[in-house]
Amino acid sequence: MRTILLPFLNFSESAQGRVVPPSGFTARLTVLTAAAMAFLAVFALALSLATGRLAERWGNELARASTVRISAPEDQVDAQIKATLDVLNTTPGVASARALSRDEEMALLEPWFGPSLPVDTLPLPALIEVIETAEGYDGEGLRLRLAGEAPGAVLDDHSRWRRPLIKAASRLRFLGYVSLILMAGVTAGMITLAANAALAANAQVIRTLRLVGATDSYIARAFERRFTVRGFTGAVIGAFFGTVAVALLPSAQQEGGFLTGLGFSGLQWFWPCVIPLLAAFVAFLATRFAALQTLRRLM
Image 1 (spheres, rainbow, N blue to C red):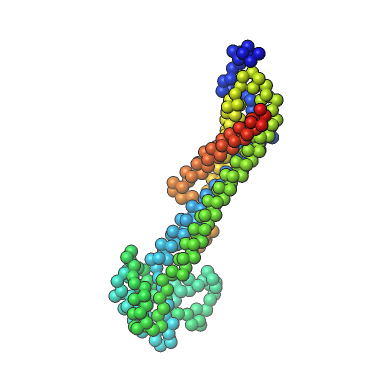
Image 2: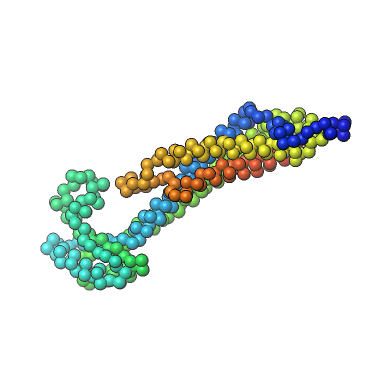
């Protein structure tokens, strides 16, 4: 019977595609899952890249800038400022040093205490901004010189701010990448379930195809192709809307701090295009695994 029917069967690409139902619950589930996971993946990727970008910028700024705080009796402040500037200007590795004015100190405190802070009535320390060269300076040596020349001067090289920032950024990046892996796993799991459901629903069709000469690899390829296309289509939709949503986020602003500039930058805007390709690859592997397992059970 199989020998008689084989010459009249056309197992072409179009015929192979008709083995899998073009619509139904499994089709909608696959497209919806891929779209949702791709949408979330864009945000996880944007957060990871933006975190690294902001941490690098903040780390570089804090690494190049230091602060000298002078706390002394009012009649000694000017003398200690002058002594501190003399020490800084003669220290190798210091590019520039200048004392901040009261207006600049007020601007630094305003985001925390508001514009009506009575600066004149508060015993605020004098601040000196220090910008170092690329080579940097010897922090311990500078502290010893300041202790001898200006006892009220305290050097803050911002290392205590820099270390937690870098640590937090690395953890956020790690969590972002873990999120991408988990999304890929969820996508693979849902597509595996959908493919298993489609295979089980077409068990009788699969047995009939086997009777007329179709091989398991032929049947598996039909399901792989259809679910891979569905996964890719859904991921394209999700990645597109995710990229649009990221583009609508506020751009980087000094006042906004970490809550702005969470989008992509430069060539990073091409990264969302990779997500549909990865989704299609995950869909292919998941469907192949499900198809081979189910076809083995149906033997």
